[in-house]
Structures are given as structure tokens and as C-alpha cells.
Length: 137
Image 1 (spheres, rainbow, N blue to C red):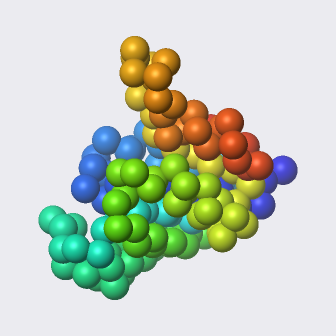
Image 2 (image 1 turned 90 degrees about the vertical axis):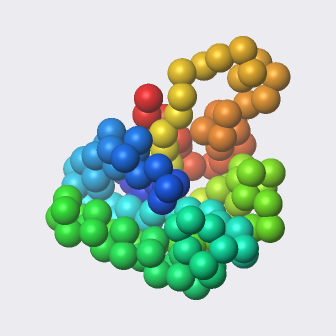
């Protein structure tokens, strides 16, 4: 049913993504679809990496670790953005196309008042992407 699963991750908060990572791995095993872990960084140094190249290497290592841990095919796709907060929705939409993903498995938060004014990242993808979107709370 699904050929490639995209899972956006925040390397600074991996500990909060365990349920989402497990869900993506389970779906990958069920459908035999590789998981591509996508992350967005700025070109400036951060607490995760000094350069976008170092960030891409860390994301690649994370993907390999997830693949080994869950026994699945795993890839990485690092994106550099001058303002990741503002560009996140558009960059994730573009990543769906660039990676050829037909399912997005991503973490979300319980709805709150601000969601009535600004859609969540997952809500935006679900509304605008051609891929199916599975939101995990």
C-alpha cells in the first residue's frame, strides 16, 4: 500500500519522538517501505551541529541507528533553511515530493486554541500534501 514513509524529526528532541519513531518503524515493517527521516536546520551553528554538513551527517547516523534498531530500511534527508520556523511547512511539503514519500508519519500535539488561528505542521501537510499523513500524539 505504501512505498516510502517520511518521518520528520527534531534531533534536539528525539526523546519526545519515541512513539512516532516506533509507529513509523512498525508501518515500515508491515508494508516493507523504507523510512526517510527528514530534518530541517539553519545554516548557522546550533546545539546539534556547527554546519549543515555536520547536521546531515548526524541525521544520517540517526537514520542508520533507527534502521538497525528496528530492522528496517532507513534513509535521511537533511534540509537547510534560513528560517526553519517560518519555512517548516513549505520545506516539509517539498521534502514529500523530493523523497517520493506517499505516507508521512509525524508527531503532533493535542489541539489548543492557537490551532484555530494557525494550523499545526501536521495539519498543514494533511490538508495540502498528496501523501497520506498519520499524526501521532
